[in-house]
Length: 322
Ligand code: GLV
Ligand code: GLV
Image 1 (tube, helix red, strand yellow):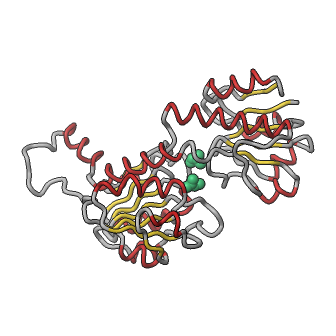
Image 2 (cartoon, protein in one colour):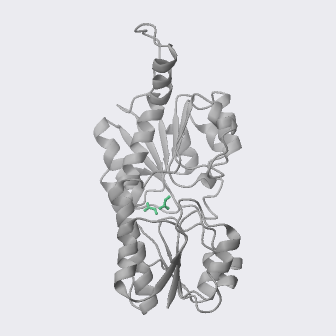
Image 3 (tube, rainbow, N blue to C red):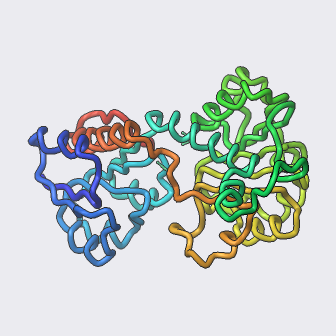
């Protein structure tokens, strides 16, 4: 059997594939994405595909792969880049990498929240450009977590891990929203299930940790930002498309909300002339939620093991239920 690996990935994952002796594999051995034309050519006839969140696996790719393709293993927890209906129709199995990246991603969400609310990048810039002239009582003030209300959009594994990390900062109240209440997940934080509108109105910090689905696409829009307090901070570590980015820009420019911290944008990478990058009250990171050495190694190993299990027709360590 043959597999295609669409990028340079940690050696740990490759070693698992190489040592198993289940398949030979072809790899796009570069840090840059495989060009679309190469992807379409190289996937042809493959039995397995190990891909990343930056590879759009749609009908065209599935058609190019042909009927050999049995398993798609993505080295990500998000699966919004996969045409799931088409994949299901063809009886292809899908592996993904939940759980092992929860801690790293939640940690990054907290780091981004603090960097945004306490204006770290802006402050560092002032040190470098001579703006730090003296200790000034009214300078570089931000918003603290103590006694705050935090609203989590999507109280899944990552959302809960974020709440667990924020609680010791003295958060007074947690709110959450999603497709349905999750009393068991919410109990630890006495988090209250509320509609999105109320979460916007009452939160001092909004953290988006939901997955991107047709239901969540564009959910944080003009109406939502208009409900948020002028002193509130918006954080997104899920997918850029959950947010209407033009509406977010307007909310930041007009002072409708205080600041935003984004680890995900539309598109990715964000062009360097994007207007959001000119805003002091917006902190943008290049989608590094899961980027610890340990987590990326573990993701590559899990993705490799999912692929191998799928090729052998065995139970995958982490299979997406289609
Ligand atoms: C990262 O965004 C992932 O989906 O793993
Ligand atoms: C989302 O996929 C999560 O793990 O919270």
